[in-house]
Image (cartoon, rainbow, N blue to C red; front, side):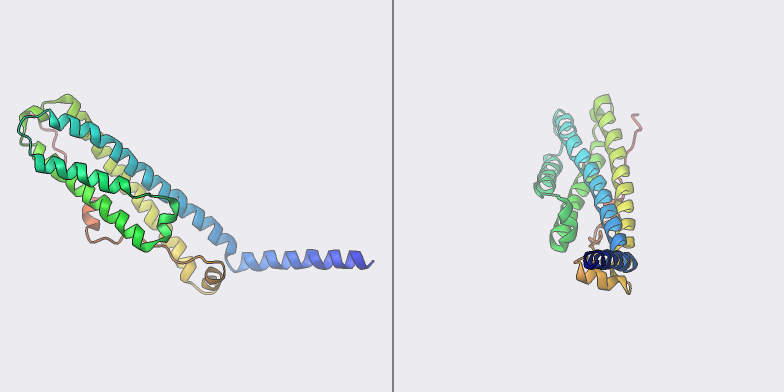
Length: 202
């Protein structure tokens, strides 16, 4: 009889704990935290896609005589800097590392934009179908980066509201779910704008 009472008491305690965790938003934190990780992974996938395109773009541009070496060098250096940062899922929980990552990606966006603008001054590049195909791929990738970033931002906003609202903020403190950093670099507008692409080959 005593064992049954202990077993019943244990079951009731576990049920009460489960209910309390549900009521305090614990399960919501699990769901929203996973959602932000998934959204961040997609951002990283698109950044990697862009990084993979750059060697081919650089190779195409190198074939053009007298192309501005400074512009090309900045792209190469910016890519090296951006890809040197280990972009793990945990990066989003480290504001300082996250800001460095954002800044590096912003520099790469700016360098690529400059490269695309300068390339308009070279008729051979404008007439090069391989280079034009790479530009189309780059533009598409930049658009996908913007979409992925916006989804991540919205996901973080939902998570952060949960982390800062009462009473779920108490759960956040107990279970270590601090607010997550968002994209806040100074060149946010530049990062969100795909490089201008002109397909006029005249």
